[in-house]
Length: 154
Image (cartoon, one colour):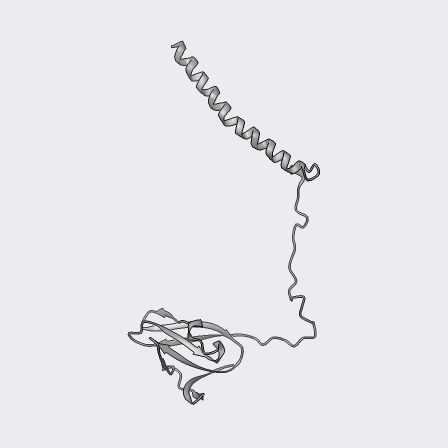
């Protein structure tokens, strides 16, 4: 019985040594790291600014610069049955349909919401690679000899 008790005591002492030695080595390493900076005490390091708000206007803008136009959130919505992919190409995205894919919604509806300044915009829907006019927008115009849908943002 005494032999088992001394064995457990020896194991507990060995475990204590194995746990405390790396902690002491780590503590010394941290102290050496902060001492090379001129004897800083880690407990006294505090942030130099407690609260800071960035300027509301970028510094490169002049106060007398003309105001930027307000943006309106425009919803492009198309109802097409059986489509696998619907995208929008227009003069607002340099006629690049890859930059504006529509998300599929319930009921064969495809939608995307984008910010645009007020004005008139020409666009086409690309349904599975085919360019078609927006079926929900009766306003049309011409662009390089082809008929396109016309959107007026007020």
